[in-house]
Image (cartoon, rainbow, N blue to C red; front, side):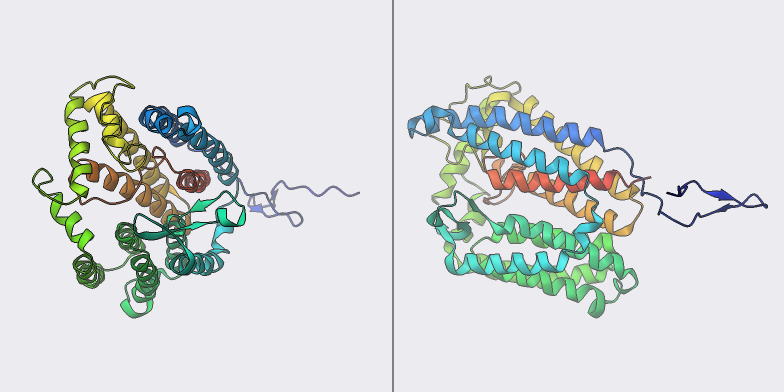
Length: 391
């Protein structure tokens, strides 16, 4: 068999000519190991804090002798870590071919939530497959924000010249965001709607939309959110009680007061790992939405600052990847993934510290919730793959 060389040929003038035959393999650089190590460290720290925050509650409810949450989260972490490594070696350009299918599927799943979703705490946000013998329950909205990032990154990378035109560039993106927002309002999931709108606004900014167009988006979103708050009494209570949770009669203010007591009693260095008092059935959702309060109580201000620094470093690496990516699609995709992780972490910690109204958003990589952990790790896998195509 004749051997076909893949080395470049040099003509008589000394110029390199491509050799006909087998295509040159696409070279990819190394993974962003600082990002990988940071994510693994945050996840490992999350497992430790989850066990500390949930052991007493699980034991008091006879959930596998106190190890219920730790065991479940460890299984999902192993699955998510494996998928993250796989996706870090799968060319992210392949995802662009799935953008339309992903958008249709996620909209269909969110519609299914509205009609047949499981209701928990007065809201329909979950698809529960346990009734069919499948031990799986998840929120399609957790995937929706990354599907939105994927679709917008593809649209804006192919039509950069249209992003300064409102009707042809910005409006189609607002239309898709509007569909998501309507479905999220029907699910009574306004907190996720806020994250999705902020994510879309960030993507439009990176994609080249004019400031006037972003102000138009804000003008459309603001009154809708105000009406959504005024329509439901529990939303009005959440907005008002965080201003002064100590005097608020709302039921949710109890949770917020316990959270502030946990943060305040932790002081500078904390009470020590496993010595939280608020986790002894005083603070609701101590293992999920309000785990940051337990971190503050046990590890103090020092522990909180170190965790915030880890998130900040993760965001820095994501922005660095986005800025150094060789193609526009990868750059926008990296920026969007980084924005989702950063915004959700900021919103969760702001809620725990009573800087923002109470929401039901988890702390990425740390809060209890297997499907959320897997989805975030998969997103980091895509981000790692983009890091291999940087310069």
